[in-house]
Length: 329
Image (cartoon, rainbow, N blue to C red; front, side, top):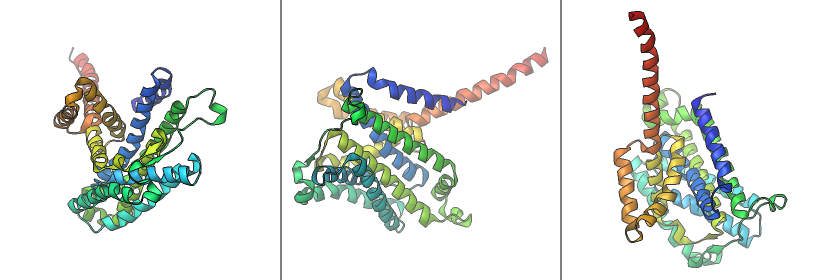
């Protein structure tokens, strides 16, 4: 078994064991980290692998969150239907936006998605009959299936559900990015003209990346909405989109593991800054982000990957040097 597989297995064991070792509020925070990791993975696919810049993924999270809230509270449907519906809806919207984005250059695409994210909160406040206006929508708290109610608390059950969905989505991304889809996206990112010359269809793969990324963001929005049992327009301000982008950069834009690191960073760094000094928490958080980007330009996961590669190279060189030293004697 490779070192990477051992690391993934160890991480899965830790994730499975944590709810039994930490307080309920910490389980709740880790659920948030898992949902953010899914959204940031969408940005890793879109920006890191296809080279398309998006500043509007908070809008897809809003669509996912409000879709679930409306279906649960107003239509009376179950989580089992509402969450998949939100995923499909966000994927369809992402494909539509991706088709439009093909006409825009990188900087104009960034501005267009920024405008999309900035318009979401005012729009949600305007259609009060559906969205609840500024008051938002409250939902029933998640609870475990009847067969598991005597074993798992509601927050523990949803923690496992969130990380199980994350594992599924990371598995799909791992398989796809290692195959033809990943190679095509990276070819388009590096040189669209060269990609076309090798038979890659930029229209199809760019649109695919947008739809795929939007589906992941919508999933994260749906999971966060169910976890908090509440949605409101203020949750989905432009700051959310920028926070997701910051998490992707801090974690590592080119690495899937960076999505997990980035999800943990945007969930726990503000809490850490609050504990250090509540009066200057925003400043401390900002300085911490700048420090990470300055001293770890490849992101936290990228830096760790570089260190692992350097140690592996050093170990390989040492093994090769040992027989040579024996021959000299």
